[in-house]
Image 1 (cartoon, one colour):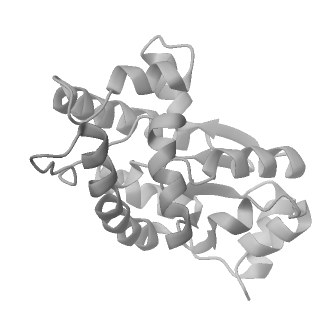
Image 2 (cartoon, rainbow, N blue to C red):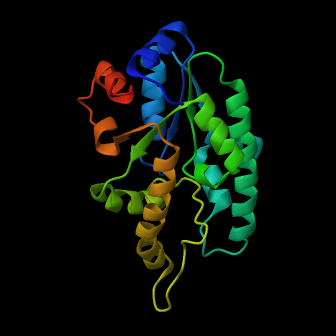
Length: 214
């Protein structure tokens, strides 16, 4: 949704602004969405939560454990099912986005149906939380230490002689690079992960960073 700075702020004040956060898993989407929703009184819809509740799980950790890793048996089938469920959950989130709503999309939003991605762009002001080179090491370790379900698509290509963890670490940068272009294509603006996760960032500074520059 293309907006000027004036239109962005007017929609917010009138209760007619929908914002969607996109970006890599563990990059800071959920924490930023929760913070913005609380400070500016927006409704928050977490797409991941809609999916794991539909699966009958009680937490993100259970959802991640169900989906598993790309080197595990049955992962491809669970990955396909996860994308199907994400498409349905994202459509549900869009249908529920009425007045001043934040949609916290999953990291794999780029894999859902293209027509639904277009709906996101039409109905929401899309903010890309960008991963920088300095984020790579943290994100690789978070894959195991702070697990979230992750769609690998064709980016997991293990090499003989490496352990499962070593192959994940070797393939992760390529996954990140392939996704970055898709996130940028969806977004109306972008901010870096280091910016939104800065503990000294004020609510007003976050608002001003998200709005269009002019």
